[in-house]
Each structure stands twice: as structure tokens, then as C-alpha cells.
Length: 244
Length: 221
Image 1 (cartoon, chains in turn red, brown):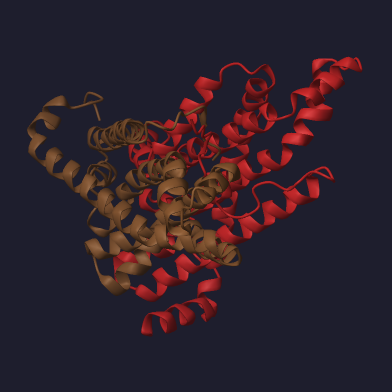
Image 2 (tube, each protein chain N blue to C red):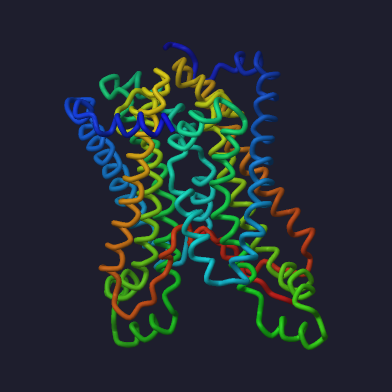
């Protein structure tokens, strides 16, 4: 239990809460990086997901992107991008490489959940809306987006949690964030610091998960059954079964 | 860095090591899925039978799933060292949520009237489970195994930081040595492995469960 005591000592030492390598600085770096990466992914994936879901075209492309995205190791992307950012963006010291890896990581969950959510809107409801004279823009804004919102938010939540967790790897390519404590603890054999860093990242991941879930509940239209509220509920691969 | 993008000669020189790391990658993945299934399957049956236990089981494995992989591996190695055990504890804990959810979801999807018919034919609850429920749930369970396997293949690369890693070894080599060839090799082979294994598992599942017809398969992530 010495490691736990060391970690506690690390977290309660005032010196670790000050300066450019203190906990607040590293936490803020981590949060900033996660916000930028998830935000950029949202800007790209949301419109594409809405377009695919609304038009019901390009599904194959989107699901392929999703499946390959799941298989693509962020660690590998990081390793791949790092030498090039070092060459072309030498001032970024790991920032650009980490951002690119996290951006790619965040796209598939947002893209897939958006198009599946929009596509899942009941055909009769759409028919009724069109019968009332709504054009495609009104259908999208007043029907499809609100009804798909719980699933879209779940996608953003999964993306953000994965980004927060994976941003830890940025420390391997000399960027900052909370991963610094883990990697530095590794290098110096300071197990207490490793545990303290892991604890901080895990806390941030849980806060992200709960925060976005709460936001989703607040944004969702009333009367809509909540979907995907348990962690990982959406990891179930939905395969229809026909008994013959 | 006036080197070509990919140093094919370096890859050719290291073909032996590529084979070794690839085998290690497959071994680490297979072990994690095997152990993960042995733990997840009984837990899922318990959660299915005693519904009240489903939320706590899903909650605990959900927390395990949320813990960042690097953090988990780093903390574990403080206790179990730079070993296969460390890698496997981490990898197995990430498979549990996916496997449990798919087993339960598969069993939930078995039509009630099919079960009713089996009961009417005099099947015992145990016979219904093994001869009706599980065969009909097999495609969804297999889908869970596929997702868990693909996820694990990606995660194995991270174990390079605790001295394992399979193909992740090349990725770390690429980062530490600023050598894109090695990083590219590790990433591409790891993705290729995931795609090949995923397709193979799907083919095996289709061959083993001829009674199931996959109507649509989609992943919500």
C-alpha cells in the first residue's frame, strides 16, 4: 500500500499544485486538448452524419469509416504523425501529433451515431411532416435532429471520453497533459506519481462522461425514451435474428 | 530527414522480427479474448437470469472500460511488473463490458414464442438455455466477440510501453527513433490484422450457425 500512500502524498503536496508543470497546468492542458480535438471532430462529423442520415445515402462509406476507425490504434497514428509534425511543425512539440491522433479517434463515434440516429426517425413521422408541407430543412431541424439528439449526444460522449483517456498518450511524444505524470513517473520509477496521474485522468474521464450525459438529458425532447444511458450500452452490435 | 517515406530495405531486413511480433500480438489478443469470455459468459448468464444484478455488473465493467489504457497499464506494472500478466489484466478488463452486453442483448433478442414452443415440447429450463436461447443468440454473441477482438488488437499496441506490445513494438520504435517506417509498419499491420481477424470470425460464425440469417449488421459506437 506504499504506492497508494505515495500517490496521496503526491496529490497533497502543495508544490505539485503550482508552476508550469503543476497539476492545474497539466489538467488545463489536458482539458484544452480534449475540447479542441472533440470540437474539430464534431465540426467535421456532424454535418456529414446528418447528410448521410437524411439522404440515406453513403451508409456503406460511413460504416466502413467507423469500423476501420475502431481498428485504427491511436498509438499507431501518433507514432506515424509525430516524425512529420516534428519536421514540418517543429514548434508544436507533440501538440500537433496528439491533436491529429485524437481528432481521428473522435470522428467515428460521432459520425456513426449521428447517421444512425437520424436514419432511425420513424418513416411515418417524416411522412406526416412532409404532408404538412415541411421542406427538407424544416424536417431536419424540427424533427430529425431533436429525435436523434440522444444518440448524437451519446456519440459525442463516447468520443470525448475516448479522447480524454487517449490524450494521456500525448506525453509519450513529449506533449504535456496529465499523461506527463504517468510517463515521468515511469521514467523515474516513481510509482506514487504514476498512480496519482492515473487517478487524475480517470477522474477527468468520469466527469466528462457524467457531464455530457447530463447535458444530453437536458437537451433531449421531453417524452422521448432515453436511449443509451448506461456506459457502453451502445457497444452492442445490433444484428437482427431471424429464426427459420 | 532526407530519407524516403518508407525504407523497404529496413522492412525486408527485419522480416524475422516482424513475424515474431505478429505472433506475440495474436497470442496476447487470443489470450485476452479467451480469458475475457470465460469470465464474461457466466457473469452474463447471471445478469440475464437475475435481472437486478445486470446494472451493477454493467456499471462495474463500464468503469473498467472507462479507465484510460495507459493509466491502467502503468498502475498495474507497479504491482505485477513488466509482464504478460500486467498486459493481460488490462486487456481482459477491457473486453468484459463488450462481451457481457452482447451475450445479454443476444439472449434478450430470442423471440418469446420460440421459447414458449420449446417449453410446450417439454424442454427443461437448462435445455431451453443451451438448445434454444444460446444458439439463437449466437450471432449477437459472436458480434460481441468480434468487437472485443478488434478493440483488443488496437489496445495491444499500447502494451509496448510496458515492454510487450506485439506490433506496437514497432510503433514505439518509430516514436523513440523518429523513424516513420517502423511506426507505419506497426500501424498498418495492426489494422490489417484487425480487418483479417474480423472477417475470419464473421465467416466462422456464419459457418457454425447456418440457422441464423444476418438481416442487417450495424455498429453504434
